[in-house]
Length: 394
Image (cartoon, rainbow, N blue to C red; front, side, top):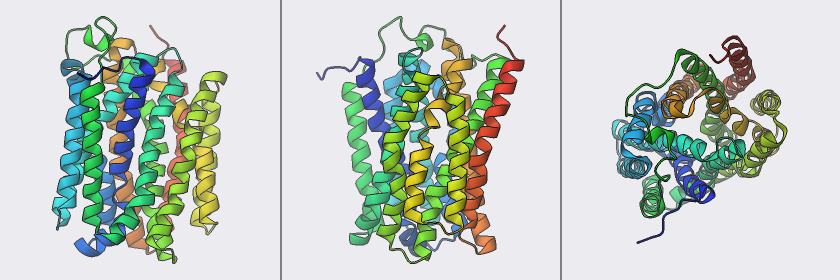
């Protein structure tokens, strides 16, 4: 039998592999958007739906998914989620209608949601009180790595074969990651998991925790919604401006390649300095300016790199917020609420960006919309801190 990974850093590495798959699958549509739109006869609103509805199941699955993890164990949820992601890619890669493509995205997204919520609980459980921002940032860096791989590789692969073949290639990679998890993942020893040492029930939050974790979820939602709008609509904007599919995808991928270094670094600095709020405010406002400059005609490659440099200050700091307000026994339910709100926002905002493009005829409008979302990140943090001060622990 294969040895089980119980060391917390080894478990984190395995979680990163799954996170890479999640980012890759999420980003499968934008690099091949021209092929998909032509083949299935889609408009930009429908394209936004294909992008955003990948995360739609999280609205309904994130909260009960956390409870399922407490009841059936981490490994069951991780492997089951990977299997759903594979099924979703197979359905998408064999689609010839918008409806079937959408169904594939929803199934794959449901699997990704189960994995994502469980990962937040797994990493928090193993690193709470010791390098938590660093560990969360390393985990989060797997997401842009998957996105970068998709942006850089899917367009050329689709051009050389077909967009369907490019999607199905990803299904094989996800299946391998799921098998690796089934063979290697080890649960915490008995007695060390707060979520597994209580009677299984659905709700574990008091009112204070619920209110504050919702506000923390808003901070995370605005930050990520802006990023998703940027990833989803910038390739099409660049292609409309004369870039090839491959060049547009590579240019946008510069953001994610750079963030592979800056996101873990930002988390480490958050742990070392304790200045997470400063990082969130500075990073959020700076990135909003970068998006506005890109929409107004700034140099795409330079601004893509600037985006990657600046965004690294933010994710690790935001992901420490739930741990500030949740008791150990509340983490599973609390992260379910946190991610349910996040998935609601990421489902709604990309179609709105697409609708703005369709109704205005202006390709830069989605990026200005994204800049506005990013500017809301520090504002949401201010509301969270105000509520936290007014609701001291009992």
